[in-house]
Length: 251
Image (cartoon, rainbow, N blue to C red; front, top):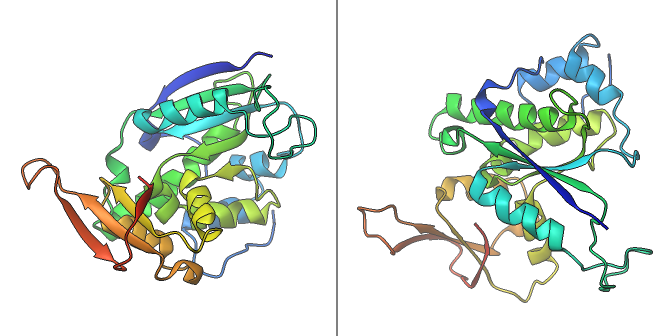
């Protein structure tokens, strides 16, 4: 049982995937790039998604994001043994859960777009970047094997680009190809309503407020603790949100 790892360093803002007609599934407006992909059959991204087979066994598991997030996430996947490999019961069986899989690490060479959320232009760019990053990971360009599952580690991408990406993937009936760790942690917190959850993160509080803005089921559950940058009182925290604070759930 061999788990292989492949690392790629990518300057995501310079991705060159070109942005029919599946129904556009959206309750809020999506970015123009997503609408173009859905509506234009000749668009390479449209063709990529239209031909994507979510049930195919081949393909890599792609973990994409900043190095400090991708490294521990990919390591966790390679060492994971939480389920029975035969029937997927939540029981350890001494067999690595991802035995035989190839885990590809795609490292963001430029993290600036993840924090450029103070302006509408920066937010728009981040939303489009999230979609382009996922499409690049699913594509075969530059790799022998395409991605079959993509994990986008960035909480900022989850906050601002997830809705556009989810709308796009649902339009092509492939909703389970891309995952965000922040999503999984939030859902786990919901499953234990007796817990008091706090978020400790170097990201602006605005990022998490945006993530939870349209999710009423989380109202009143989280408190936000932001680490103050060096020079403004290192080691201190700025707090906001609901006063119920507890253990950290997301970074």
